[in-house]
Length: 500
Image (cartoon, rainbow, N blue to C red; front, side, top):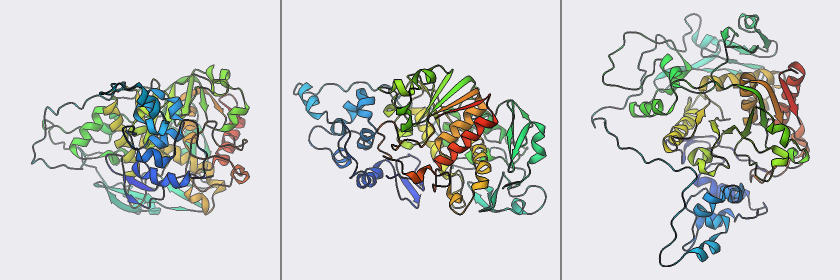
């Protein structure tokens, strides 16, 4: 059993890692790392070894460096139109392709399911002498490290400059941690909540679980929190697309986490060009959140899953051939890995809403929010390459709230190992469902089976008995998350169901 993680910062083109302690990488480097990992993994039908897929020989070659990895995810069968053309060697279709060729010319390459749009010419290029600045369109009124009273970062963190701003790096220990832009809120066992959650929520170890129809750190804001990044959030933070016609502003903006999105002028223009002005609300009467766990093969939830208003799936989980167990409908795909961001044609579905998220740390002392911004840059690339795809990315503010909820629930379990724990994709989607759906049904979130995924993912083969211990795990603690979901079914039986 093995699982690979990355602890690095992506380059702007999202193809390589530039810094950090990398012990498993993606794209070009992953081919070499995973070749060693997969030497003992049995080959799946239709997929060659990583070394063969990476090298390519003769006239029949893979055209993408990720082909062998995709083949291990059974994409040769799940997405044959694209894979058999782009990845013939990894899919072992070279002989068939050669038989179909009529010399001297090769048949034309079939169109991909989603054709990238050509890059439009820059009609108004910036003068060569114009400097690229990273600064707010509106200056901040005060440093985020200064809460207006008391010591720096509320005496519970250190101040560090990043991307032209001051940011608080909050303290974390076995006994608990501090959160908030100014490190003003403690999360630990028994910690009190801001304003007692306004009487509109339940206090959990310093974090407010708001009642439906309310949100915010103290549950005083009406409505549902906006989970997706949009232009309105950037504008509220004092950021705006650069324009020579914009007059200098005499106002200042309050410190905001959205000021982390400040970037050079050209990049800021691209960001504003791809995010919606105001993201549409995410609202469903009932939501099926379907896991990738192999336990689903022991159930027949397919029809029940399809009966929900919305059906959400994680990280390109296939449905073809598994309809009896996982259903056939999909209304949203959540992805958190850069092979998906780089080329969404590898996804088994390309007609559903796509939501990008991440499970690695949002902020650290050495590189600020660079990891999250790497996801943002990847999202911008997808929106430019596939402008007709309905795609959103989870906002930094919303992701921060989801992490805070994770830490609050984890507080009673905190120990030295738990300091490295981080929420899984399932956690973030479960939080998203709780805030967006009147009724949430989670399917297959269980470690009952001995196999990890219900499909051949090439990521992890089996589950050890130790994995079923809620206290087990260094990063993702799946069994513990499943215990939290079970508690939600008892605390919110009218809103939350767990179908294991």
